[in-house]
Image (cartoon, rainbow, N blue to C red; front, side, top):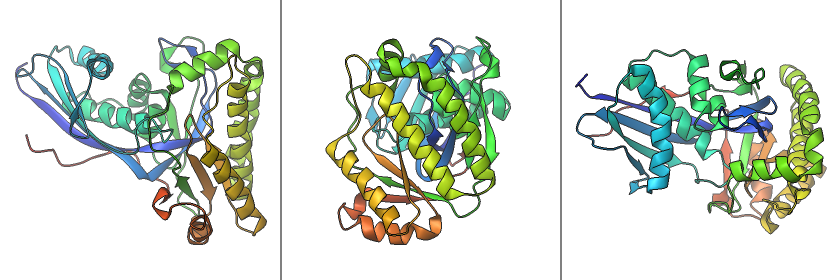
Length: 332
């Protein structure tokens, strides 16, 4: 096989409303619990992959910067899964543009690996199904499995150590009056990765023993609320689920937290929004930034109030986002 293989995809981030926090199998990237997310229009990654005999080794360029050997190795391991399916040893250049602050708790890895999975699938003409692609994306980043779809998405934890039983699928198109506002309090990369934090929590937090049981209850409750289009109920469940996740970290030994002073200020601001009659609830992932679940019809009013205490440039409104799609190639 000597011809070049090339494709370019855009994939969007997703924010979990029922969190994924912890793996039961590290090697197979199998989660302890199922989870549910909302894909966002405002944050996305565009990734091109170019397999060619002209490359002696894999190359990884992110936002026009050549990445470190460590980052390149991570990408190479992911590409190897697709090369194995195609039965090829062609090296590749991966060129990616992240329209999301990287490693800041805004799900940049989800959109990045979803876009790369789709590009590999098309470039190598593998014709994988959406379910199969979701499984493949999971090996790059667990949450990437959910970015294969738009709207509300459920990621099934699967059974035992069966790698093929854990994948994401669409739950609801979210084509109604719901939106999300990202309140970006810090765009810098976090001090410790989600993977490190998850494992430390599992190993040392006494609260983690209750986590799976709580998630199972929250997941069923929020699915009913989504079907009823009850944003107040959705928000209440998501907010509590997020705080329970962060409580497991606070109880770890040694304790740690992604909360910063501005995070706490933002959470209190959301509580005050509710006192004015607006429908707004917060969620937080492994990072300091706060996301606000609300009716899209109320975003202007919420923006106006938040702008009194936060930089308007850091208040980013989003509608629900789409599944990944092909985009024009970058000039070679």
